[in-house]
Amino acid sequence: MKVAIVFDYLLARGGMEHTLIVLARALKADIWTTTYRPECTYPELRELPVFSSPLRFHKRGFMHTEALFRFRRMDLSDYDVVLTMGDWAKQVGVRRENHPQIHYDTPVRMVYDLYLPIRDRLSPPAKIAFVVWAQFIKKLDLQAAARIDLMLAPSETVRERIRKYYGRDAEVVWAPVPVKKFRYKPAKNYFLSVQRITTTKGLELQLETFKRLPKEKLVIVGSVTEPLRPYWEGLKRRAPPNVIFKESISDKELVQLYSECRAVLQTSIDEDLGKVPIEAMASGKPCIAIREGGFKETIIHGKTGILVDKPYLENLVNAIQNLDDYKFEPSICRKRAEFFSEDRFVKRIKRVLSKFEKGIKNSYN
Image (cartoon, rainbow, N blue to C red; front, side):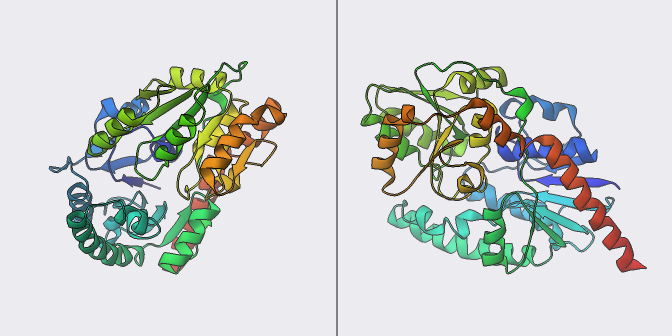
């Protein structure tokens, strides 16, 4: 079976980019994308067949729209199966010849569940433009979603979104985490926060939390794309002195930071799954996270982390102050992380594709 994996763009180091690498290797697939900057993403991608069509625009909104139409024109008729990942890649399925199509991701969050939080942050002129743009994009997104042959979800949280916004069911295949590369070391005096930098990761909440905890130290590690550079720089200007920022660090340094932190902090709005808590657990460390989205699926409260209820600010401060009252066992954290290992993911995805392939053949017999 000849497989093409279609991905929005390769400009960062994040959970979906890691999943892409695991999928491409397991399925011996070609990768099709728009802009690809090897220096900005995982070096492992250089070892894989990547076909790119660089975008001309790199501002938010313009970039998204150009990518959407670029995928609508893409011809992948030479492949037996097209697997799409991301907000815009699913648009390849609008072309009849780009089928059968499998989509593995969440609905476009900026026009569905995150629409209001994003809209309400904007200035009046930007808000008007965003509302018009989102209505246009939503119409095209629903059109593309209706053409998808099989939907896969990286978590139960995403499965529920697919039901709500697309009126479809999806099969859950837990997103993979490279559990084997992480290790445990005795904790040093800092907390760790890791994420792709967007306005929905709750970073302002983290800064405010550590303003109230001047004796504690937070290290924020971020993967930043150029459209969000001003936001990232603004965070650094507003941060208290006990918060340290690190950008695009090596895997070796990231593993080291995980291994020696006291705990990991996560505050994303309704996260799809959240690989960071799993990476923390693989390092034998607990994760303190707000009780939303995929965090509720991965963290076992009191055993592998702390799930914080609203009001988040006060309860995050309390959780950090009282962390030593919990007796987290590194071995229990590690065992939980292994449930989301790459090996389990590859076995599951191959079973799903084998079943899907048989169904396709039967439909033509």
